[in-house]
Amino acid sequence: MAEKKNHFRAPVSYTYRRKAPFEQLLNHMEKVRECIDILGKGLVKYYKGDYKNFSEVAQRVSDLEHEADLIKGNLRAHLPTSLFMPVDKGKFMWALREQDKILDHAENLVKMLDMRHTKIPKELQDVFIDHAKLVMKTVKAMEAAVENIRDLVETSFVKREREQTKKLIHKVHDYEWKADQKKYEMTKGIYKLEKKLDPMDVYHLLKIADWVDDIADHAENVADWLRSMIAR
Amino acid sequence: MAWSIGANDVANSMATAVGAKAITFKQAVLIAGVLNFFGAVLVGPHVTETIKGKIVNTGMIVDPHVLLLGFIASLLAAAFWVTLATWKEMPISTTHSIIGALVGFGIVAGGMSSINWAKVGHVAASWVLSPIAGCIIAFFVFKLIVKLIFAKDEPVKYAKIVGPFIIGVTAFLITSSLLLKTNLSSILGVTELPHVLVISAGVSIVVIVVAMFLLRDIEAKSIEDYATVEGIFRKLQIVTSCYVAFSHGANDVANAIGPVAAIIPLASTGEMSPIAQIPPEILALGGVGIALGCLTWGRRVMKTVGGRITKLTNTRGFSVDFGAATTVLIASKLGLPISTSHTVVGAVIGVGLARGLEAVDLGVIKKIIISWLLTVPVAAATSAAIFIILIAIV
Image 1 (cartoon, helix red, strand yellow):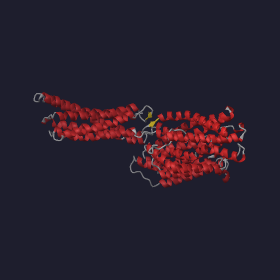
Image 2: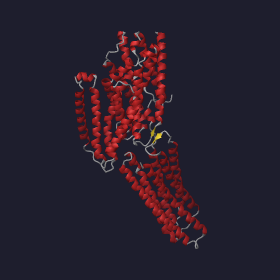
Image 3: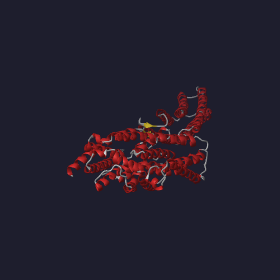
Image 4: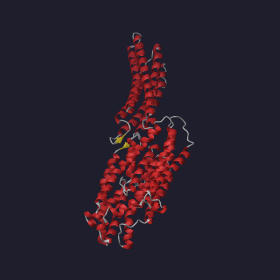
């Protein structure tokens, strides 16, 4: 006989999941937070032309992406149709998916940056760094909005908490918009220098601008799904 | 049988409190043991009556010897089935097994007409209705908590007012159930309905004042101090846990004691008198059995179940406890044997539907329905088989 097995009849225990979905979404978000912190610092150094240790940054980001993937996979695998959640399950999964895309893009970005060390022209350094910072701020704002889920769940989505989350979501939109404006400034700057620069450099600079900005776009998408998740 | 009930069903009903960390395992076992005993002795007779004499029409079977064997067969069949289910970890109910077993023996002994089908119908209906009732009550209690506490600008302040009031309602229900048509009420000489209501109201007011007094020092640390709200409900949940244990004793003691209550007079006098009172000693025996069950085995079960449901916070646990216990207590007063654990599941789903839980697995409903469909026929068949064997031997 299996000694370790406890024998009892307990229908109550079938009602619950061992791991709550929102808790896991927040765990996933923690991975995003950690990853974006590392990426933000690494990016600023890279822009300044300091490529030392960048491979390690790339490796760490890649590891975090993998850890987050495991959480995502686990969450997806354990949401059967019989599970009842206080929010739309589809929207919940979309929020998770977009949150995961942040990490995917972060990984692609660092891998590419690590493959070819593209020098950022002196004239563009400031605007590049500003852009990176705005993107990081967008993600930070998204983290704050997602974190408010805890209070939402605790109070079973009362109006006050929903309004708070909405305010946090507005901040995400604000930063994302600012990041977009910065990106146009960057692109304009790159075109201005196109005669001076090596074509391969131009290509890469444009790519960097795009890929960094993508991170902010996906953070905004997470916020949008969150918004529709809590809407009545 | 009583031991098995104590070990499993008590754990089921107390697990919400333990899972929500309102009480420790030791406290849960103690509360469950003591209050189950009182519930069984004081409010137990109604349901025991039903099991003892209202399922099988005892007037139809004239031979007391046959009746005696029949009740023994039912008890054995139910005990066997419950033990098997426990071993296999199936979410069946002791209540359903014993009713099924009684029906089985009744059909074999006296034919279809010996079963009081109307009563069986009532009981079966109550099995469907009790989880739904638990669900509805828990839903509204939780909605009330959300509307009156969480939606306010100062949740902690309102928790200190609303909490004691719900506890007051609990006290009112318990006292009135104690005083309406029970042994206690005849001892105290309180039988008139208005009297009972006045006394119950008095008790609940006292409880409200005491609860408010005990909570007076709690202050909110910030405006959104939900942790403190939960802390208040952690204290209040101790009361509702007692409520659950009490109601559980009142209802489930009959599963074990009902047949025994029929056997003892049969064995001693050789006659079945449907009007005979159920002696308090037998109820006490059942109560002790249940208490022993949860003292010995309940801890282990509770630990596992409680550990699985840690996501249940105190406000949720409170709503579940209140919804389930109220349903079970009312059913006990009506003499309907229902399943406490299934009612608890209903209450949990109710809170889930009120957007109170991160996730509720509705698959459990299917499992429970299967267990309904399975338990009654199987227990009936087993009981019939044992009965035939017993008749052949004796």
